[in-house]
Length: 308
Image 1 (cartoon, rainbow, N blue to C red):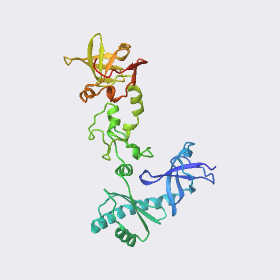
Image 2 (tube, one colour; image 1 turned 180 degrees about the vertical axis):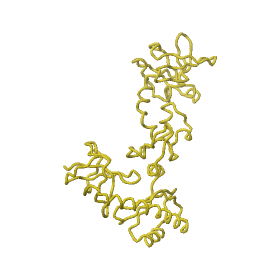
Image 3 (cartoon, rainbow, N blue to C red; image 1 turned 120 degrees about the vertical axis):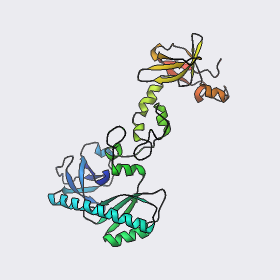
Image 4 (spheres, one colour; image 1 turned 180 degrees about the horizontal axis):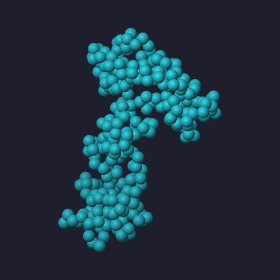
């Protein structure tokens, strides 16, 4: 099997190509490749072995390394894209098409111009395509993308101070939910955990498995711990310091290292479950089935189904 090469184009668009001629290339080299209809120019992003895991079955070929004159054509196309963007925006307003134009990309050989846009719903852009085809005299493609793809194409800097993941290394988007933030003890306010695209940050997924695994050692927040004849509520947990913060009846919060939690301590379900009339026939503490438990200090704790 020929070596596989990942090539990145404008807007962080990535495609894979075979290298049957065994052309010597390195990461960062400009290359000419066989595109869908014609030829295109891109930059080698990776030639590593792991590229083979992500590549599709049918691939086109890498043709040759780019020459200085190819780079000149590429730069001229970038200038054309600016003019094409302004022209397309004017035609969108003229046709009153409900879409937001995001970016324009010329294929290297000029055989195709792709206009990327976002829209709340499906739009009829047939007349717009005719207008653009008559102006540019080449194949026109309008491609609808999501707001997360838009952020990846435009780029930017996140609240972490680093360049957006979607504009650098992230290859595919995974579903992100508010529950992921809750599981990590983060603010449930979407405005505080949303990225540049206006959606929940992709990085909420990165450490989720660690937080889930670490939290299994702790009683759940809101549950009651009864030891030494005193009932206290778990108000917070600190998985990094491995500490529980317990709230007594007077409202005083006391830290307790997880290692000092007595083995066999009674754990009672949180108050909100009891308010709903949780009993033996319907549910256990924190919605667990009767008989389920959580591990504390390696011990199996059976959650009582009432306060007694």
